[in-house]
Image 1: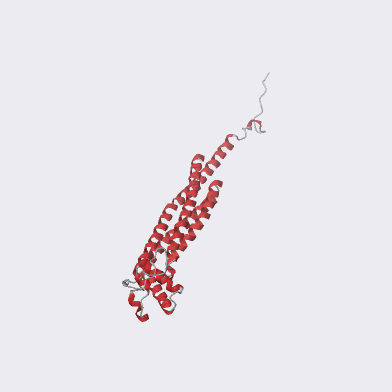
Image 2: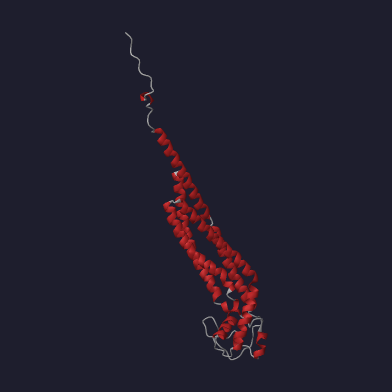
Length: 269
């Protein structure tokens, strides 16, 4: 029984090491995906970022849970082991919720992107300074996605001019072509559709990351509760063995020396 408990103990210790490593990987992956969405936050809205923000927070919490699980597995305190298992269960449930949340946002992200882009386009159109931060963001978006406006170059009809970025000419950058004197070919597609597809790809990666993390980390729930069950069985066996030893080494029967014992008879002469 003790050997079985030790096996579960070392299995849980190994899991907590892997649990901590998965938290580091999850932190890096969610941080990268958050960055990929954050750079276009003005065009897609902040609601799209919430699932990956929650996933990033769970990666930090997972490190703490892994440390708690390591300490409780070494101490073999049953109550603490059960509490650790419950904490792992909560982490897995929240991570699976991130998967569901990301898929829900994935299904409706086209509406969020179009609303956010339309609002931000009105803000940028009201600013007549071509070197403002809002105008530069639109220029970079036009060049990176080879698009123009929200729905197309017709969005600039009220301004009577299409920005040079709609021709692939924009701010000097290592990945961009420099300014040119003329604009011969204007991008005909709007930026809403390519940015919608971009956001969907990122959300799909977020959902898959959360799903894989929840499935892999769920193995720790079974290991932890099996360890708690093994501790209970070992404790019962220890109590049973202690009871048997007490009954074996009980006081000898001294009833022959009791006052009620019959007196020895003397020989008759």
